Image 1 (cartoon, one colour):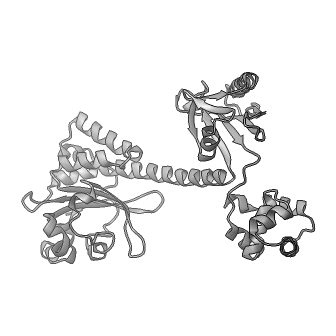
Image 2: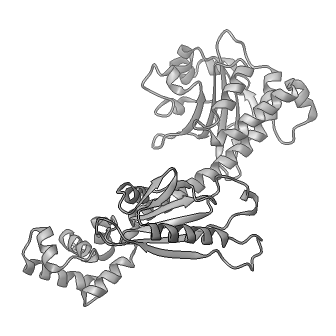
Image 3: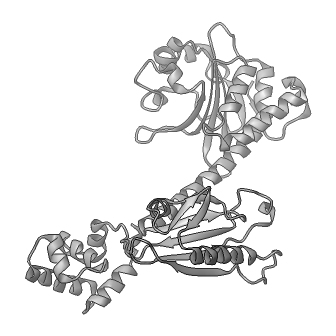
Length: 397
């Protein structure tokens, strides 16, 4: 009979036969799973070996015909990749061992019946040839309402899963659910971070995170580009190095003042962290770099974390144009392709003559396009056009 997980009874642990160190190691692997390069590879492998299974899988999102699933396997899927037709692309539609009651731990033979399972398309066409006969599974509903699947497969010679094996899964299932919830939150945060990072990169704004000792923790693509030019500022030994000695001293002072401004107490009424700014001359003679230094408030629990950033250094090259899509300008202002290209050149400070040369057209043609651009943007002067474009969402594209 299938077993459903609500509150784990003490007898389950006795049936599972865990030792304390063994159970602790399994829980450690489960909660470490979201941070692994191949999520839950350690936990899946540990459970697979413990239950003498041929394969273990955690499916966070079941596949459909128009969208692949999100699945983690041990051994990895390519271990059995003899058939180009995969579970994602085809066999998921033939899988009858789905839609288990949430939290229920059962075997495929109990759920479907032995005859029905052995006559199923997925067993005859795929799993039989891979020597996967017996399956133990559970469906897990996360706090976000997503239904995940946990599956273990055994070979024909290994025999079906026992009541003890089911008890092992019952004892682990609540922890797998919590770890998946953590993974889901991390995934959402990473998606948001990626969106913000993309927007900053598109605006060609360099951002470098420093710890409280001034050591670089992370730099985005725009910052790495500026620093790789070694034109007055670079990274050396994990720290900023400025070519000009006076600027170097000033920069260090501002970084230290910024970090020291982080409030020691976590009182909501405490003054906010300090923001400092300076500009840097470049030996090449190019325009000065703009530098802003802002302290990052530290959460109380992360004060002793050596990887916690203390401040961010923002580096901007005023001569560097943002990476704006002509297509986005067309959509925003109903420009033609030629008008959008011209508007982008105007926003980047080009004169009419320079724009005509860049577009390989006559100046009169540029003037004609510019009148249409003014009309569609609702402005009458080039300065207003530049302000309108720069204040639009185009730079975030």
